[in-house]
Amino acid sequence: MKLDAIDLKLLCLLQQDCKKTTKEYAHQLGLSTTAVYERIKRLEKSGTIKSYVALVGKVEVDKTFIVFCHIKLVQHTRENIKQFEREVLKLEEVVECHHLSGDYDYLLKIVVRDMGDYRNFMVSKLTAINHIGSTQSSFTIKEVKHSTAIPL
Amino acid sequence: MKLDAIDLKLLCLLQQDCKKTTKEYAHQLGLSTTAVYERIKRLEKSGTIKSYVALVGKVEVDKTFIVFCHIKLVQHTRENIKQFEREVLKLEEVVECHHLSGDYDYLLKIVVRDMGDYRNFMVSKLTAINHIGSTQSSFTIKEVKHSTAIPL
DNA sequence: GGTGAAAACACTCTCAG
DNA sequence: CTGAGAGTGTTTTCACC
Image: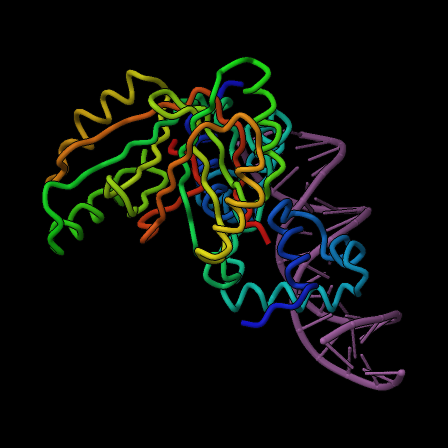
């Protein structure tokens, strides 16, 4: 879909806070509420806006242990890749999984409570998946920045 | 703050979709709308719910090039670390920055349009930051999984 | 494509129990 | 936590620019 400058500005606002009133967005964009209302509906229907979600504080729910785990498969057959990805999707602790270029095949971002929980996750869930050759985990000492907004 | 089982269930629902009506959450939780209304307000005020945001499709806004960039600093003085982190926060293309354990010091997640834009970003923005020793970039071939929800 | 008003509706929020 | 009521925002349509 074609997006003009106002659409991008609106998306920026919605990526920061989606619970304001249409009136307020209209004010910030210098448009009428109707115009903004219709733009939002259009963005929703076109799939540009995928969903509206609540962001939860890691500290408040006691899930502050973030791990990045690089994974190498033993063999890169189509079947192995498919099966690995299917299994990873089932693991709720894995919040992101990227098929990467470079030395390692995959990068997983895992969110758990502490090192003990991570060990349990590794032993009973992750390494239970077939075709994994090797893994390398790095732990987040400090989350310097985290944004869910796509830069526009 | 203390969270009971209902709070966690409610947070799960809100992490998936925050635009439903209180009535609907009440129905799914088997409570009255008022009870759910007050729980949500409590979660907001305690900071457990940090914000409500729109999630935007990468494809639809033409920002499908995701890069993970490992960074090593030349020297780990307190001043270097502070300055590096301050500079990184200013870069809108960087959606995540983690201070990591292991070989490299930082892991950055960068979202741009294509390889050309990434090169520009590297040359004119990232490498302009002081104290960077070496970098290593991996490109996402496929985003297998991406969730903004913390597993609860 | 945008505006402004108005009507119908639904939800938020408060309060008494 | 419940249920009902008052207040408010959304949603839709309309005539018009």
